Image: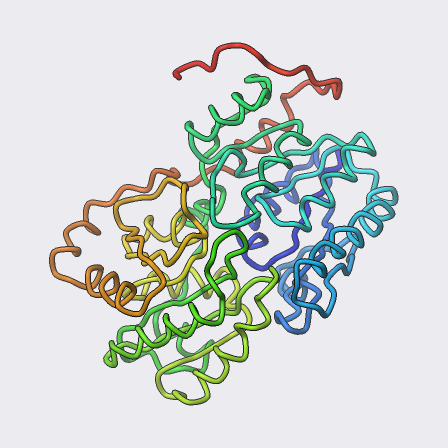
Length: 386
């Protein structure tokens, strides 16, 4: 059975890593990789190289990103994706296509897969992020998909309420948490050496993405975050680039300028990669920004997240996640809260609602055991437990 896995971003690949390994090592399965998006972008670090360094063979590389940084360029990238992915999937002829999340690149490949009658396995459906158009994309992908592997029971219920048959909707937990059980993380010294950046002070991790469905200008908000960080001079900061949503390229020069102005205190990198990122989370004082990782993975390390702005609004979060607005004083107050002695007790007792790992094997089990009939019927029945 040929299982094609699509990845278009560094973060998505990191979450999928152990699923790829498990498919690769299963004698009854053949792994295929379709790589696109920022993986092929020099501006984002050409991260497809990390995929190859991890021992995976990339079957198809499809470039879709345009040089523009507007809604028009993103929309045109979806069109380029439809064209490129059609040819790629026709050559690959997989039995299933695995897609994670809510990116515009994923929307394009899922449209193609549905029309080519390739059943889609969707991970992390049913979730809500009200501040980004990713929210609508995620739900659209769910309706175009055949097998659903949700990260929580509440999300599984939501997918069923969208009309998907309960027999094809599974709660497997968050797949990125497989790293907790299976990945040997770097020590602080190893991380420092790998980054060529001294980590002798406490530090923050910052990842801020453009907000595409709220009145939250990326440049202004980014400046506010950096100004708030300046109010904590005893803390260094590791900064990663934003994603390829419209407005992302406007943030990068701001981040680079900040790091250049503060070379002993700030490091900016296009991509840490999953190993270095999770190793940094293990050692950091707090994760700042609006990445889904701060909500889904970081609580498992008993580290605090300052979730800034509207992007992740609506997503279930642990008590270690503190939401705040985008003004300097709001960000400052949230950082002060998570660094307080009182909050240390919160972190000691935090439980991650997204599970504790072992999702990859559940995804493979679902693929192997579901009988495929692409003539889906809309499920109008009762959602058990609701």
